[in-house]
Length: 281
Image: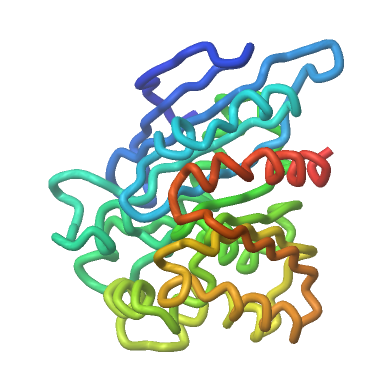
């Protein structure tokens, strides 16, 4: 069994919020993640369904866990929350001086181009390596998994679910990047990580994946209408159109006055937790 290091641990809402590190074979460096384990009760003894919560650009494994305010309701619903870091890190890991590239900006993919390929194997870490650790060290029911994310993490939630059908019973997102091949963030990151092959870019674009035949059962997406990134980077109307063409049930909720930050996420996280809990029951 792969060893994990516990970095922090605290009681929270009757359960336990903890943060951990392990040496990742996929990423070739230490990788961090958080786990909230809900309390056991007469009705819920565990193992518990798992909701993966992917954070966005500039964030860490602590961001969703600390800022989203999800633990209280997760405890009531009996949901385990897993919050992975957003990229590999360390002095030996490639980086970029820009805030939207490199460390904390992995786009949750397996890089194939230098210098990123040697460590940026996030899809493999998240789909093939970390789930085994969660199953081995925590009371997790890996037959009941959901995934959600914010911004770049929303992109990750959508694309990982579409690329791995059957793994996640439920998928949602807060202000996701839905079409990175068509917006500046993706047009910067995808060629850097994947080279000039546009076909490889499309494999990490939710709208392109849906147009190519990838499917999920249904989607829940929330978007603030006062989001500064809405028009240029997020483009939820593209996801709406792709889902309409493909017949994928999409609940897209637009909210006046809400921006891109965690006050927005906090405002609607309860709806997402209840939505996932109903589908992971």
